[in-house]
Length: 178
Image (cartoon, rainbow, N blue to C red; front, top):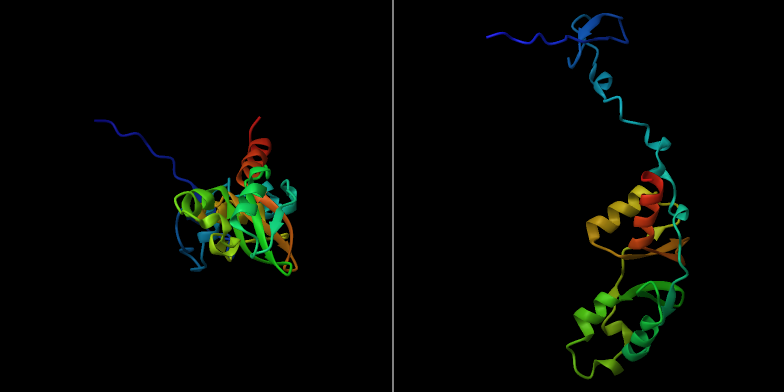
């Protein structure tokens, strides 16, 4: 049975210039850590990746907004005409909720007489939001972890736009695929 020889690679200790086996945690000569030298060559600096751009690189839609005391009927009517499928609920310019197609299906569809109730009774309260200076990697993480399809974007606490999952998917396709 023949064995295939394995190639031995070395790294040079930055402190004492001694050769060490690749994968050693510390230099055998001076005991300085070598773990930083084991980073894969494909690990780019995060600052150089497209995912480090701010949310402003995405297409921010102008969101439709309504007050929390609007009726569910009014909100559904507005939602029918809203191409993004979500309405931001504002109370004195402060985001207090979001009302989406999913809310219609989960909270309205099987509830008789709810059309005259207030939007506050069926909205998703205190939605997770993004800041205008958040990175796209943060957007992807929050949308993925939370299962969100719509996220309001704030600047200095005020609503400036809405990011939709389709916009994020389109951006990823344009950046990373031909």
